[in-house]
Image (cartoon, helix red, strand yellow):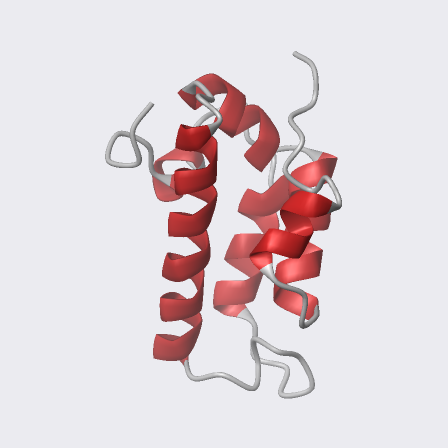
Length: 109
């Protein structure tokens, strides 16, 4: 897998995606308007930039782990993906710390 062949935007059109995981929280983050949240305190352009940076980090990590596009989709649509998103969108923890505590584990098929 290369980071150029996979898009989280494309994953949201997959009929198997039901609004969960990293994909669901990613969408919520982009649409958030509540000023008391991290996303709501950012401009729309800042939210897009934050997501782009985070997406790139996830894709780079997945490529380094040799995840297939299917494996990446399973993670992005999983509870673990949701926990990762909660971690990254709702706290000050770093990407590296999220990896360390196991928030980029892929569920079994």
